[in-house]
Image 1 (cartoon, rainbow, N blue to C red):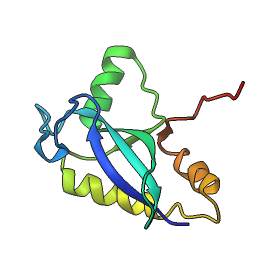
Image 2 (image 1 turned 180 degrees about the horizontal axis):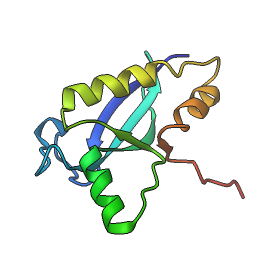
Image 3 (image 1 turned 90 degrees about the horizontal axis):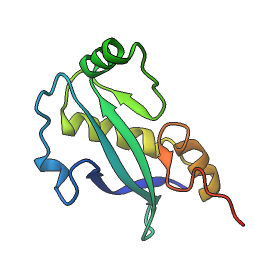
Length: 121
């Protein structure tokens, strides 16, 4: 089973086409990508969240807080939507598996899955 990105949004700016998102400073930014990912050639998918940021943002965060936790983050030299999409798409497609649960296990190593902390009652 090969996963595919079905849609992308920038969580901080709801209802804005990601193509139109421009951070104030492309060298010092952080934004969260909401990715709907599902099996290739099937409808639907599940939500995954990945923060994308620059080294400048990480450096500033370290100066302000004294540290930076890096889980579910992709660090890129500057904001370039085309490059970011290529990196994420390549990674998503490399997470294939024999079942959807195996695929989700691989995807959730890097991005936060909408059901990460779900517990059945």
